[in-house]
Amino acid sequence: MTQPTTPAGAAPETTPRNDLWKPVLLRSAAALGFGAVTVFWTSPSVEVLGWAGGLYLLATGVVSLRAIPATGVAQKSVPGKMLSFAGASAAGAGVVVILLHSDLLFGVIAALGLGVAGVLELACGLQNRGRHVLARDWIASGVIGIGTAVLLPFFSSLGAHALLGVAGGGAIISGVLWVLSGLTLRHDARAGAGKP
Image (cartoon, rainbow, N blue to C red):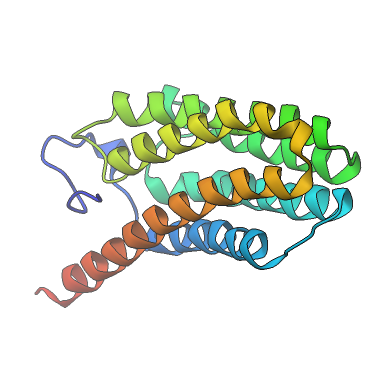
């Protein structure tokens, strides 16, 4: 999924740093960790739903916000503002879900956080397609986030296990995407460092 480290035609202000792979792998770790919790916790309570789902959203948002400088995107540019708002939306939804435990609330608030973040990542990916190394990953992650957000409210009446299953399924898919991207970026950074 990940394009070459510096695509042809990339604007100078969008050249990513060589350590971009680190926040990308951190994001994948948050998603896969949450996905593992949803798979192996057989009968979660509403509190588990709130804490696990909220910490996942919070971690995803914080890592996304901290990754913006490594992407090479200027924070005051339009893509920088979109990525900042996407991270803030996920983190904010995470805080609300941690504090207030309810199946319905999780279905609505998590859907809003994932949906807003997904739409903004998708838009950022489409806007930077062919010009940024993470454009395809933002597109795929945005589609996964929007899909998860659309499904979550329909599972609110089925309880914590169903909600964790839907959210965890989306997290696992995006986690695999981000781990592949991070490993590709790491390989490209090492290969680039080895060249004279």
